[in-house]
Image (cartoon, rainbow, N blue to C red):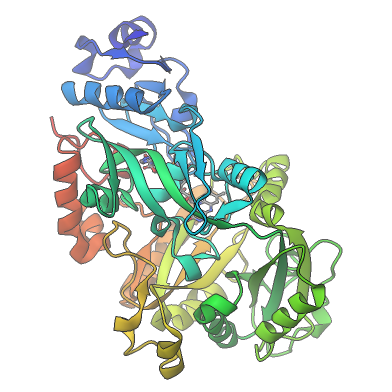
Amino acid sequence: MIAYLEHFVHGNDTESRPDDDVTEVLDLQLKGTFDCVHTGIASKDFGGIKSVKPLAIIRPADADDVARVVKAAVTSSNLTVAARGNGHSINGQAMADRGLVLNMRTMEDYFQVMPINDSPYVDVSGGALWEDVLRRCVLEYGLAPRSWTDYLSLTVGGTLSNAGVSGQAFRYGPQTSNVTELEVVTGKGDTVICSENQNSELFFGVLGGLGQFGIITRARVVLQQAPDMVRWIRVVYSKFEDFTEDAEALVSLQERGFNYVEGFVFVNSDDPANGWPTVPFPDQEFDPTRIPHTAGPVLYCLELALHYRNTDHVSDVNMDVDRLLGGLRFIEAFKFEADVEYAEFLLRVKRAEEDAKANGNWDAPHPWLNLLVAKSNILEFDRVVFKKILKDGVGGPILVYPLLRSKYTRMALSRNWNFASSRDQGIPLWDSRTSVAVPESEIFYIVALLRFTPPAPQGPAAELLVAQNQEIIQFCSSRGFDFKLYLPHYQSREDWKRHFGDQWTRFAERKANFDPLAILAPGQKIFPRIH
Ligand code: FAD
């Protein structure tokens, strides 16, 4: 198919003309299709705060289509290209103002499992949804990726461009640490296979690279045997110190510990969206009379999961759970448990999505904030942010759980619980060669404010919630916290430089190497297009 963008721009949509480019004819020999008129999906994202109109949305069929589009932009004087995964960004990161948006979901359904005994992997399209990867790997092969996100209607390329974090990351690192090879279309339009040993600068650059260096068209994801079942547990704390100490002890256990460790803050009230009812599993009760009188405005829930097989004896599973929970300081009356199939556990947020769609909160604005905060600052963060600024909740989950930069040997652990001097013995879980920016601290917490409030006027105006996010960021900065934004979003080059810190030079060099005209991912607002 020969696509003459100019024709469509002139013919149907003069409003969205890119000033200089309207005179240029982009001759795209695509297998896929494009549309200059019905571009609505590309000017929206889950955040619902930003909206810009692209020149066209393109539905690539394969990596060759992606390369053709990028090459066409290279030859133009000012076109940009944004890969759009599933558009679950918050601040317009997958948008391109009067540029070309590639809908990566339309890429051909590439899926190939190599069930090699000791190191199985799957090759998947960058536009595949993780929930599809899960279903096919588990149902067809009994295998599964090791590291997930909580919610799986996100694309492989989209989460790998950030990090991809969930309750397995303490053991396997983020998703960016669980891929061994990528096929990438660079900002020059070259299609390159890269890995730790081949074109490694591109490989590590693209992982957590916010789409700046290349478009991921295929990823090789490490797999492991999938369990059949999961014992899913929630225990409640009134003291944040007890919660964090127990959570840190559990993530430090690694191999003989839980397979999933997360946590969340909830309001000490009967509020259905923020309070006690958000903790128990279906058909279980939260008895508020058992809350200690000393408890404050918020409580904390540790969420844990242990994998097992259908052939495992239930008494062995119980014994393992008792061993792991023994010695923890949660409030004894608040222990909730459920046994669910592995895939059901991983798809748990799908139910929340269905509920939010039914009550209209899914399509409302979502001014979410995600932070990575050093262990040394998390108690003060709790005192001010959780207990004061957010004491009434955010209308949805407030996640908080520890992550480890490195995995430690048992010897290092027994010698030094706090890791202060055992840094050299760790195996990196967050590979510093990737582009992901994390705090300096060996242990840091992910804090996620997953706001789900009805649109104004029923709920607060989005601007107020954005301002509250700014207040929290400002608080962390003013106290000199060791923290980073996860899924970062800034307006100025200075802020981006501060975000990357001493990694900025490397980040800018990678940009100059792989996308010298700054064509890719303009919605991140890091590098302006070079004309
Ligand atoms: P998009 O939003 O479409 O794109 C994000 C960025 O990546 C853009 O800059 C885009 O240009 C670029 N990009 C997209 N595809 C590619 C590609 N193939 N190659 C190169 N660049 C590309 N994150 C977690 O880590 N853990 C979670 O548990 C988690 N849960 C979430 C739950 C919900 C309900 C939502 C809305 C988000 C959640 N996220 C989570 C955040 C999520 O990882 C990011 O928003 C991610 O960017 C979304 O992926 P996407 O496929 O929609 O990407």
